[in-house]
Length: 266
Image (cartoon, rainbow, N blue to C red; front, side, top):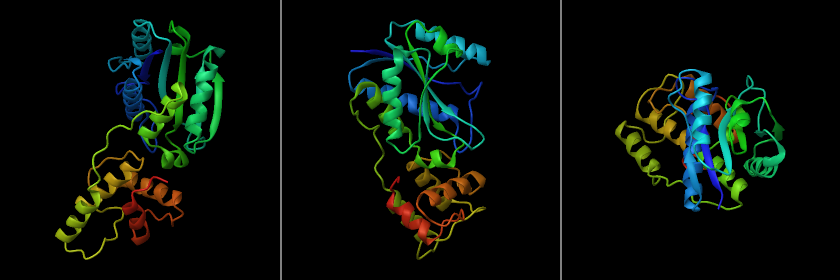
């Protein structure tokens, strides 16, 4: 069976792009899930992520060094794109056509999740693609500053698509906690004296806001679960509403509650 090196791009000292979510954080979430899924299918996988490099050059050199320590068949670099909110979709970058089949299959699998398929692109200037001993691809999973992509994105679905593109196999889901969210929401509303789900909007604080943030993350967003309804939470709510054909007012009203309670990703 094939042997894979997998790594997340950048690190928290040399961070990647950001927008509706952080490239640095989500590249690691996807990387971890990809490794877990490949291992569940009995593939040998090495994690070549660098978290120690203090400059971009150090980060890239450390990644390549880790990759070249192993006799792998393919190096897989996980990234997210950004373009001032204008671009959206998936693309895979490669050094040569040796990786064309894998790269195209991954693009196609991710596009099946609803992302625009931007295709495979040759890049001979990128350090990791150029310097690893084994062939390498760089997956730009989607655009972290795109409202369209943020509404579609879920790290586990993304990882499953990457693994399906690589292997043609469907791997296990990352184990999820049981959904007792509705019972916790009802208990909190009762505790606060609400007979129904209250309207929640920017500036709100407390456990109901925290539960809203938790639910948004469960359907693909990546916002802080801090109990404060700030700008990032409002942006996420507006994307959530847009993707479900609701009025984009950034307020958790009765219609928005209905979709939150359903728990569907859409």
